[in-house]
Image: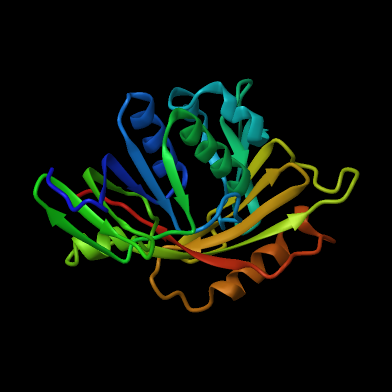
Length: 260
């Protein structure tokens, strides 16, 4: 691939070092390819996310990921507007709960140890196709790669620039992290709660973590009437949250994929 002297060339360039980008970078580096990863933030960083991992993650990651697991889930409790409870329990783990700052940082460091060159606080300003690959320009330099992996989330800049006609449906979500003090303040640790009736077209959740609860709502409408009111109604009516201080929730778009 002919390039200017100051253009760095890699086999693969990954934009975004969340779980998808970090694992892709790790696997490519471990296979012996030269990999550059660009991440606009600096890890560890907080990320709005329920943080629930299907137990199938064990088939994808090395066992070391369990060092950042906050809680292991052996049961799910399904509710309809706080009532009509149905609980599914298992003697073996169903899911693992993580905080995204610790989990993502762990995966980033695994990629770094495998040989990935990681530039944090750097993000693409322009992307374009060039012979035999893609050119990515940032405020720090220009890079060429044979393959570009866009793993930069629901508001992907890579997707917008390279595929301007692509349409990605997202739903709005709100989530709060409730800190738990010492002692048994929440009775359902080890069990995730899903309420499928609190929203007209959506669901609410309580995911237990180490010393905290991730509590949120999501609605399958692009413009729900008031997701904040739905959130307040859920936390106000959920018996397990009674007496707990619930911080103001933060919002984030959640991509939705359907059959094509």
